[in-house]
Length: 208
Length: 392
Image 1 (cartoon, chains in turn purple, orange):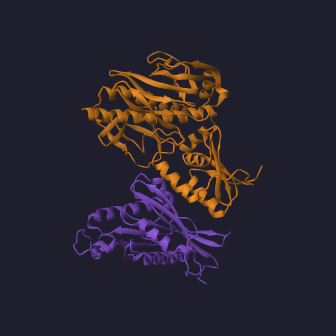
Image 2 (cartoon, each protein chain N blue to C red):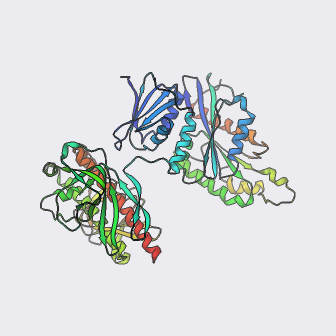
Image 3 (tube, rainbow over the protein chains, first blue to last red):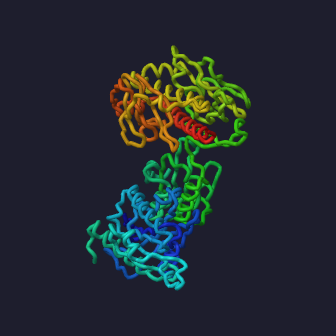
């Protein structure tokens, strides 16, 4: 649930990048931080957790317009996937307004993707949220690896991933490469769009 | 004194969430955190939403702020006021929050609560093992009639002997040990605020055989409690509440006894569950409390290695989660199987909660401490059981 900050006349909403370890959540956020530096209002906070990193920064997206004269401030987070980091996960997922699920295109990560998505479902439930209702976008990351002609790293087709992850959810999805930045912006913009539409629906605010 | 702006329980809003709220709000003032396991409250100082300093015990600055994240139980108060303390914390609030939660999950921030763990040298396996150290709530001195000093190794209570006294630990630590065929088994350590002896041992007319020995670890100061006063408070209780206290004492006694059975591998699950059917399944969220009228109820924990019998309860005992005592048994962490002739009556938990609220602080502390001791001893039993299966 977004916070309506009366003092600074801003609406703060929270978008969380979720996905299996090393699927590229952190790389996504680092790319956004670099590319949209002018719009970033805070330091990039990076916390090393075992096998993964948790990132956080504040961000004022341009061109999204205002809602009732209020700016929209977005907080972007990643979540450590490992089971033991339950305190962090709870804090980050509690009150999330939108989720970007970053899936790994490597064929060997197929099960990890599915498990992580199930995990997201459970964790959201714990926070009183519903995976079918929360604005969710999928990103099939590491597509750039398919250009490796020798096929040394087998990657899954988008159809396979759709079938694995998006059969029931039926949410927008984007192939991407967080390393080169491909698809990163589109994923974020789609997520912001869905999140704001949802916010307006929930709060029944008329857009000016 | 500045006006109270915002107060509540950390169960409802934890420190991480509070930091975000004050941040968003750009608040300036002092956040006080009170825990019943610390004499001094912790403090955090905010200027325009950013954390500038903190105090927790002897710690200051960022170290204090991080350690306060371990205070997961307690109450907070925020007062809007001018903050004159030095600005010693330079990290952003989100960085502190995320880092503190990671450290907490990694076990690097100590949780301030009833149970911690200490390494102890185990003569049986010639190795260090972990032993739970149980801290009680802050001591209520009004019931202490005499202070007694003990030196390292002094035996305060001897297993098998009679005794009616009950003490509260004022300083230092004592160890609860029990005789088994494999030698002395260390069960738990008790530290400040914990009670030596249970409420049921103070009752005249009971068979007050000590179920375990108590030995001083280092120098210890104990406060002997006024048993006359405890007894007169006890007899004023309703019959149902007396049952609760006696039944908890029974649980404590039986689970302590299990240590001997588990160490001598004297466990027969089949015989234990013979002719019994399930009443409460482990993990269910049934909140009702029952008092047994007839028959037997077996409390069993299901572990990765199958069922582990914990105890058998009978007429007069209580089943289910009593709202103010957490024994770590049914319904959440143990199942209940009952005999054919089992009969029980549901009791009004609101009624007993009301009676609990009227109790003296010492009584409340004792009940809480007893629950913690039962839960910790049950954990030791499970651990011994696991080890005995491995050694097989």
